[in-house]
Length: 435
Image (cartoon, rainbow, N blue to C red; front, side, top):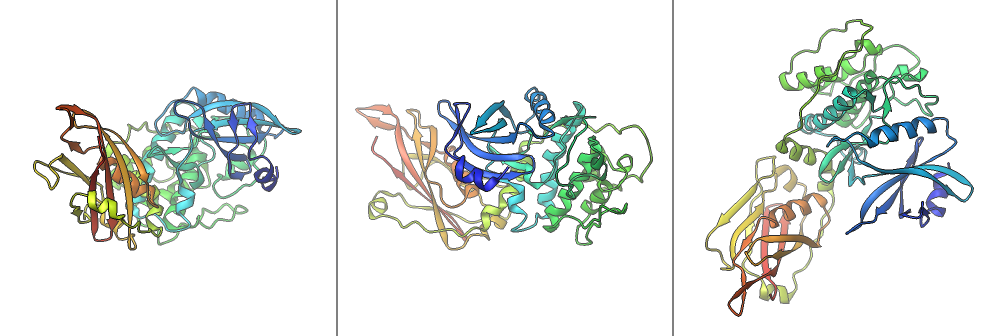
């Protein structure tokens, strides 16, 4: 399939009369992905993958999609629709999935993950793989481009999942992410562990390990990879599937830093450990690990208009926190503006504040109900970074106000909360709109 021709000629087409191809997002040996839209109230973004209906593994993909539609796990990307279509004379299969805001493969070229970030990245990946293996499925395509952020959650792609024991007819490019045994078409949970080892090394060093597929030696794990990740990678990257570590080994090693067990030959598949759901705090840390690339972008300053300065209440400054985990600060009681009962201010981690150059604004319009609670918070200006925009909106939703009054009656109102992010801290200027 000619991806350049697809980008130029197919954007604007509508699949099955309901899925417009809005933008070409990328392509691989398994198909091409476009931005599309799911109709609803309101409509929302989705991704649609197209593969040639006559590809050698088309039936395997269709069977995998059908099976995946019946699976539900918070760490797996959701599949909404599948079907068959035609564009011009080309017969195609399609699958519509959740849309990913960020992808790990976009982060790695700019910087490696820190050990703390790598540890937090591993937790949801292990959770998803453990669920799949326990249900008799294999992911089969674990790599940085299939680890993504969807609705502030780390998830694995789910459009390439296969039943354990399926025989692939064709592997177009036997890249290092694919375990040695996949050259024969074999698909097993052990192959996912190999892919996990490669992905872990790449996330920490920006490069996959060096490996010559023509020989039976293990890939070289760089000395720069810290423990326990070096030992985990070495345990995952054993050429013989039966000697690789299990997901249970990896999870236990992360918790206790105990040595991995020595390779033991066996013909039986080691059962993966079943993991519990990641806690809310861990999920928050994971978010910072994967979308931290946004923090390195240059930020622009939005000038303050004279009208806003006249309406604005005194700004509240917040110094950056030394705590790497965002928290919410609140203050109650009297404030420079008597209409404000409670302020909740974004507590920016120091590692995040150090990426700010100059200053920039995130401006949020909040709807306040007649009891003084924020019922909605939307961006007027989201600023240049989704990361800081989300911090500001999460804080804005927790503000409390004295209800506006009209003829002695409490009525809904609107406020503008203008967050100015600087390396030295955050200033928040509340501006009341006319009720």
